[in-house]
Length: 527
Image (cartoon, rainbow, N blue to C red):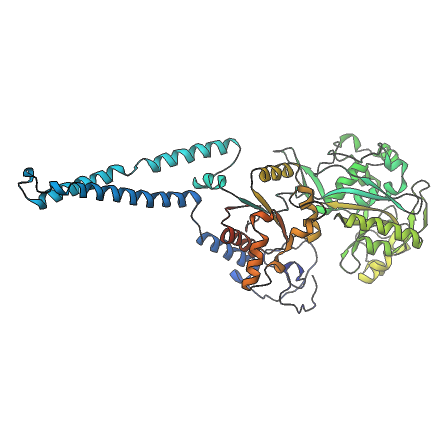
């Protein structure tokens, strides 16, 4: 967050960096703020207002509409039959059995016509419909689906469009390191593919690399150390599910998993007394913990785009944005000799090009660097001592994080669920369109959309729209354009940078313009 005034009144919520929203979790830092809105006037209050509006604007289900139509038709038919029966009996109104009284005869045959109409009404229809829906609910329950309202079973069968949130629904919501760039010793960088799609350190490894990379490659060793030391996240096993969960920031948890997959050097394992009691998924963490202790932490700062720690081995370990870290590196690690060699302009350009390739996939990139020669006051500092000037303030931190040695770059992302692509293919085969609606960036949304098969590979940008831009034109022509873009023959699509209110407008547009029955899936309160 920052205190500068933002002049654009139409700025997206994610870009309002001078505002802390109600419900926000503060992970670090402190500030004094001016309350600008409370209750239903806050952004989370507006979400609640949208939920209330959606609940009040309930539309009849397809089954209810069909029953209404059937009821009208049945009423007309029964009315016509009753009227025809009454009219056909008109010549007998004056029959002798009524004593020649036509009024009594008319009343008699009127009662008969009404009785015929009552008999024709299918009183058992509601019970039959309820029974059929209950059987459907039972089938759904076998597939571990909870149904709150019986008509939902039938509505699901009529669904023509599925709108889905991305994070945690189509993706695992588990940040995972999928690529690692290391200096190749020839003036460039080589990429190592990292396998795995969860916080499980035993899920996959380093593709194409034999065990013991940290013993063969000095840059891999230092990168593993940065992942281990510049990290406050912890991994834990869920006792109920047996799966792995994170405690801490998702990005740091991803680096914790990467450190385990890289492992610790054999020499460090041999000296670690606690290794025998460690589980297979935390051996590296135990080894690095025994190797050195953190003595000082230089917290992340938006200005320098990095954070670092000073450890008892008299080394500064740094992680941060590649553009910021590479700019402050004077040397790069030689993987074979382990020496820090000068980082010339050609090598810097080649490494930057490789980093840009990762960013275009798109992956969130973090660079790793170290510094061995520290000021004596920093090397001798211990927790509890008076803070030296070299560790006090943003300028001091930036000065300390200079003359660094580049060790590597990690590419991190939230991977798609393996089953999601199969499910989307089945939807398409069934004639159901799929729209992904996310608040994430356009690049990330398009990449995930193409990987899942929602968008055509290489041309995904043609069917991807940002929420604010999509609804920018409020004219009738703009509404017609939007309707044409969402027409059934146009196919699937992706919406990015959307606000909660945009989701409601998208679904309403699908229903009003094309009569689509839309299902919304996601883990957010607005979903």
